[in-house]
Length: 279
Image (cartoon, rainbow, N blue to C red; front, side, top):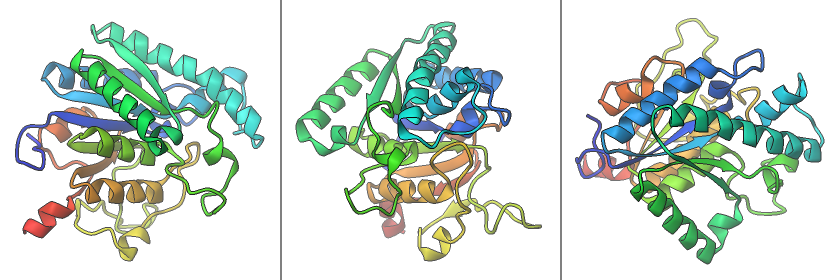
């Protein structure tokens, strides 16, 4: 089984589900895949592992409900899609987890929840209480009220950005709640040694250092979501500096979470800095 930094069994993990895992290429909900992942999370919980799920997909679900084929460019319209889609997203999770006897809770966060010490302390206490009670928190960025990441390019210096997508949100969440590992699930098998479209491209099984050479392997955005491989690598840096592990894997791989936790080498594994220093 995958172990934590102290070589003990995992106690708490963060699983981030990207938009391209939640949604099919045609813009519809990948219901079968989502329910399969829910079953895996429920099984991990039954094994005594606390799981926090960071889920994208609200904007995409809102677009699907409104019949929009392309993501709006007007911020207020994106907020509207997020508001419509968030209720649908939680309804899907609630129905799926309820069938398995697992209570869930919705947790919507903004940057200020990490900037303000009091709000952060309250957040930590609430999440700890939920996990102790056997509840699975479903976390998302509150796009309906937080527009920093929607209307301002990443390179903008008007305001220091704590996170602008759910990859970085999941990394900060892991760091502040003391989880053991972050599993980032997308529609790619991991970090490739070259563009995945090139012949002979292969997934890097392990990455020891996220340097400029590794960052150069990132291949742009992922289409519907705000993140991409570069966002995942930047998020991995946050987690590694906190001494925790990161795994990037394909959410469409059968039983991916169960196989990762059991110790199978799936996706790309990033070793924490303490492990590298110890070696």
